[in-house]
Length: 139
Image (cartoon, rainbow, N blue to C red; front, side):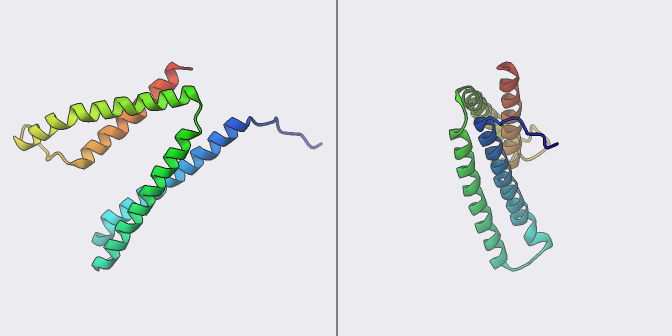
């Protein structure tokens, strides 16, 4: 006997599709960034390939930005509020953390040289934690 699937909510279907699209864009950008960073070391020596990898990284980054914009525009009011709260917390943490980190790096208070990678890691972790907290809080 052929069993029918329960009807799927259109909103949930749209969000699922946007989640998959967003994951693909983020994955493409991460892969392009890895290619740009490690390609000249392990894969090629010519500058033209490095410039092509930079172009690919920028193109994937623009796609990621547009995909994120589309994703946010499809959110309902509650998810949009959670998303914007997570973004606000992330920007606040970044603004508060960068000046002390730069000063401590300049005066060798910390045992490593602070660079943009540390800021990106801090922002990524802050965003994920605050997003999950917001989702948990409103459930």
